[in-house]
Length: 265
Image: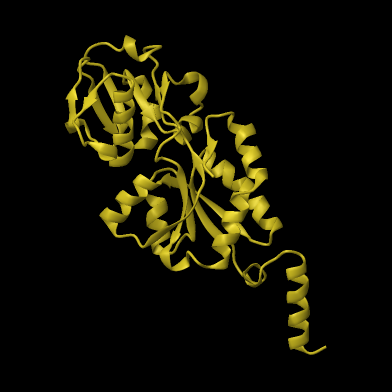
């Protein structure tokens, strides 16, 4: 058998096994950037499903929200999975990243936590309240506080509301803006903090039982799988989405996180 015939036979066998030509030709793993916690846990399961389908993945963990996009832009990653669309939009506007959304992933209803009070109504006047220092997650928390009746924002403040948009604050809450990853450690020093679910779980908090309030999961904050614009139509992207949007992954999310993380597709 000559080399051409051998190649054709190998390709035919691979296709019969359900592998795409792209998977057959893959010479190095696809690098996926995630934040530690649920995103990393989920992608370790996606990795197993993808490998059954012939797609090799390497999961790379980060401890903040800035580096995964920087690494994707520089080519150190092929995709990342950790952010919602409002955050991505702000990053693209600020930094000009040439990114595209490949698929929805999961939703993390953000929670409010405290070691000082059992309910928001018990917060004292002048209480110090920790919120994420990035515009989209900070605004997200202020909208949650407004929904809980603690503050009122000026009309039109929208998803990027800041403490400067607060027009009514009966308890005179003092907002302390911190990096989202630092907020779990702020609970000893502040009266309460908003904490993104991935960082809450990593810190040993249970969003269902430890939070004193949670946002409604129906909203614009579903997380997304992001790739470079130039890669969005490549076969491996479709394979990656197929591996993530798998019933096995949905069952893992439901079983592992028991409602604190929700499938977003």
